[in-house]
Length: 319
Ligand code: XMP
Image 1 (cartoon, rainbow, N blue to C red):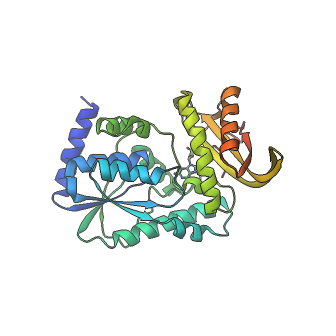
Image 2: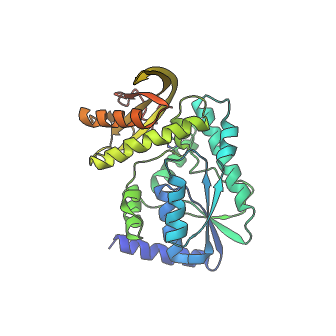
Image 3: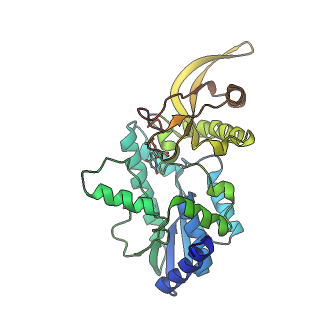
């Protein structure tokens, strides 16, 4: 019987057999797939696992700290955190083009991962959170004719000169199976069932040039939106929800003072496959509450808008 328990037992046996007493390296992103691989490998090979977590400074509110507390502190996994915010911000300075930003972030990510892993000795395996849909997607794009998918750094972005063998224990699994595995392995279900978050993170949710100042403002606004969605029991009813930073200024007024500051847009969609999506018809009262909180709590934001574009023609992300 193909139950979650069986999949776990089977994976653990296979991992142990493949790896033996070798050391394994894993790039931990905080996303579901790499998190489940970390938990699985930890259970299978314990101390033979080392994770490198590159924090690009484009993660959600407190996400980097959460990754460390969950994996390093709670689970006792060896995690090396690379605080690379400055590196990424410098690399991104002056660039406004969405696809170029993605490439810069992807390259910087590999650069940082490579640099850190080069310090480790005796590693033989590189583990990855590749899941079955990734395998299909990257196979498709090799034919050349396949649709141009936005550049990912999940698949095919390995440091070329690293002579490591690939370990991909989730390669045959679909997302829902991976999530079940995660819960069975003890990961918190609100983490395992979190909305998808793109590899380039807030880098593609800050329109145009990325700046630390913008990222800090956006993180706070997005946190309020997500917190309220959870509080109103709407989080699981939307497929993906987030906030976008618009680098334009708009006038507002607080008491007698005139404010001239930034605009954000809330985005929430319902979708099955993320290929098409309908904007989520969130209740007006809810939107009002979120908007009030954002404008009152974040002095640098004067205006909140709600995105009512469906896909197609609008994509889910703004870039
Ligand atoms: P779009 O904006 O193309 O998004 O409608 C569809 C889904 O893909 C995610 N997405 C990305 N994920 N790297 C990723 O890992 C990316 O560059 C990227 N761009 C979009 C998006 O969040 C949505 O779930």
